[in-house]
Image (cartoon, rainbow, N blue to C red; front, side, top):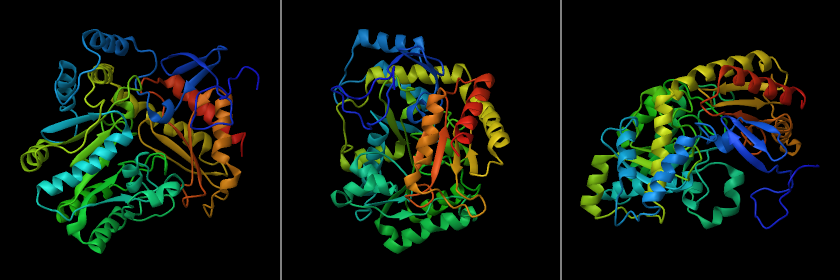
Amino acid sequence: MEGYTFPCGNVFYRKAGFARPKISHGRGIYLIDESGKRYIDGSGGALVVNIGHGRPEIIEAMNRQLQKAAYIHATMFTSDAIESYAAELSQIVPIDNPRFYFLSSGSEVVEGAIKLARQIQLARGEMDRNLVIGRHQSYHGMTLGALSVSGRPGLRKPYLDMMRDMPHIDPPYPYRYPSTGEEVASKLEEEILRHGAQRIAGFIAEPISGAGLGAIVPQSDYWPIIRQICDRYGVLLIVDEVMVGLGRTGKWWAIDHWDVSPDILVTSKGATSGYFPLGFIATNGDHVDLLLRELGDFNHGGTFSHHAVGAAAGLATLQIIQKEELVANSARMGTLLGALLETSLGQHPHVGDIRGRGLFWAVELVKDRQTKEPFDAEDHLALEIWQRAFDLGLVIYYSQGCANGRDGDLVMVGPPLVVNQEQITEIANILTAAITSSI
């Protein structure tokens, strides 16, 4: 493939065996490779680049902090950057009197949230609460603790004998398993009672499913009932907003669609729009005060926690989202994107479901619309569509295994929140062409 750079040098990439163009620069929703070819960044990697590429405000904010001090260890010092960022975040998170713990990635904040839930329970005197319930087909991160609450079989399999597995329940999946939110939520209560409420520290889930199931929006009564169940049994509710937070779904937080307040919230990806590796854990200040009073310290840390440069990037990102009203734009452009996909693909013989909220959409492909039978995993259909879209100049996200953990193809699209109507139309047209030319 002439003009492409293959991973044949000294860099160890996660995936090999396919062409890798070398990017020269990015602007807005576009990436441009060294040959001059333009790609619409329709997924921002894994739904990361919320405010677009090449924003000078972010670079300038980071540079100002770098000129003051690049690294400030959080056990010894604080900074204006981290304090100001936390103060601004406190105005938008769905948690009263919030406190924030800053780390470097989604996996890290999930790992930290699991530990935080355990330590809050210890501080309450609940010494036996050491289990965190997750959901099948979920993904919460690459660390062993995060994998233990994740539910994607292929990602967990090599490490099952290296970690302590946690309980899992079925997720909402209205397309394949039509039921009420109450019926699906009741699975959590059943699992709590099966193990004994005295053993359950928390329940973790994405408010709207991410890559594992592809933008599944639960039934309207699901999350309020989950909140009630957690309260009934003293279980801490942890919402994973790593992929769906900070405006991605047309609200500040995906959980806001149900007006539910979690005990612990985690996010990363969009926090700095990819300009710096940063994520955070948010929880109620009363939980933190209790933990510190009863246990002394939070037993968790990281060399690059509470990074001042990261906080400067995060605050600048947050201010852009607010100033340019990108949460509202996500809602408007998302409604348009969903309508365009429904018009162009809604009757396609191999499109089973089109779903999403805001700028977070997925198309699930099936062999038979009537039976919802998935394509075989060996067909690698989602990968083929991804490659076709890539060749046409659109970067999307693909996933396999949604139907049963092995089979089931879906492609996802989640462009930067700065996208406009003309660009949304182009994205929908290219994705439609990629799907229709592949099956």
